Amino acid sequence: MKERVLVTGASGFIGANLVRRLLHDGYEVHAFVRDGQASWRLADVKHTVHIWPVDIRDRISIESAVSKVEPTHIFHVAAASLYGGKSLTDDEYIDSNIRGTANLLTVLRSLPYASFINTGSSSEYGTRYKPMKENDLCVPESMYAISKLSATNIASLEARLFNKPTVTLRLFSPFGPLDDDRRFMPQIISAALKGTEFVLAHPEARRDYIYIDDVMDAYVCVMQKAVELKGAVFNIGSGEDRSIRDVALAVKNVLHSSMQVRVDSQQEKVIPWRADISSAISQLHWEPKTPFHDGLVQTIEYLKTHTLA
Image 1 (cartoon, rainbow, N blue to C red):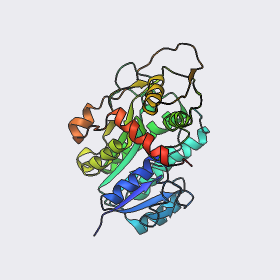
Image 2: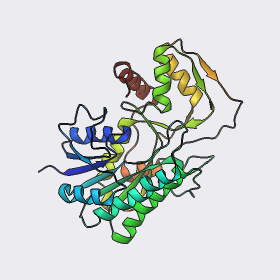
Image 3: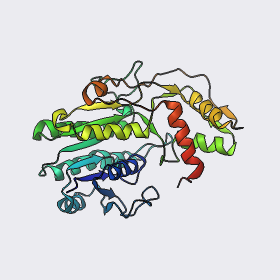
Image 4: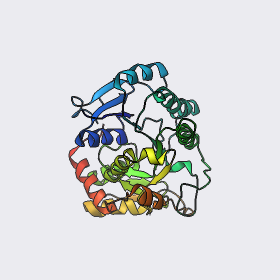
């Protein structure tokens, strides 16, 4: 009998890639989707995945679905996110990221699940001038970051108080197929494909980019080790950072594009943004396999033939 896995936020970038990876690996996949509809990201797999119309802000709807699914592994990806520097309201972050995570863990508490993998964010750390390590003091600088840190703490508390196999993966900057067109990587690739001008507001901003397949590998690694890693937090990044300007030029070079990159800001202070992934390497026996250039080429090839919705 197939193991049953549950993916919240399954219609998003990370969630949809997880759904595909778990189907490929032979699991029975159940997906929580807020509006109950298979988005464009799930259109080609909607007949092989069980889709549930669940909003994690509504505990009753979670209870109804969970009682029927009884999942063995839970991948919690649903979140109110930050795109293109544009924030949602404080209430939206609190309701989805904090209350939603608490609702999910409370409902699942009675089940003997093997893993609950919470999706965290590098923004939980705040500004750092050296590679970010899991035991660093977190000083979040936005309501989004505060809400993600709160969700991480709630997941860890569940492990301590109720001996549950919860683990958090703090993702840095994933990129690849099915990405959201409001994010930088799809936008710069789209501009390069069209040969249009692209304006960089913060050219020296640095990010730790990691290809989506490596992120999927990390999730799969954790689901098999969660019982021995209860409450742990792991950074999932490449361990390298690069500026927005360098990424834009790399995209332009790969495509031999006529795109003009215009800088619309004064010289800014360079702040590194890089993951220390030594804990993931030593405890999960995971490390990224895809060089940035290779991931970029694969992402470009995908976007050449797919229209973002």
